[in-house]
Length: 171
Image (cartoon, rainbow, N blue to C red; front, side, top):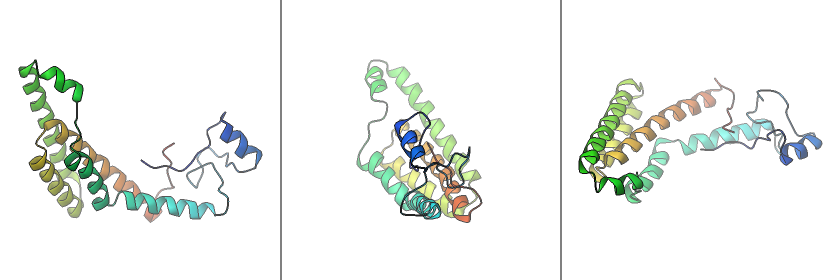
């Protein structure tokens, strides 16, 4: 997640920027931040933020990072639960079935509702890859959630690039 710096009221940063006359005190600043930058225009800052978001959420870049974490890095999901499940095999099976069902349900909804054919193909192939290389229901569920998060952020970035929306800061 990335966001532009924002000065939160009652903080030393806010006080310092206010004293320097570098605060936009509007409730919803047009540039996406209440900080007035030095040595660049607010438009330059906003354009850089949108460009960065587009690069980070480009499907190839996003899923390369995700695969590094969940496939190559073999991130151990639900470590505490796994220790408990060693002594409770039936609960482990029930939870695995539930996680698998949740992952498949979310992926099917994405593949059904995402209108962009290119994104559906990306989600399908990336999920199939995780299914083959890490057939762990907990990992598949997390990966499916990450696919959904990607889609929503991808749409946000597209709206920002078209200027259909003002820059939104995640502070």
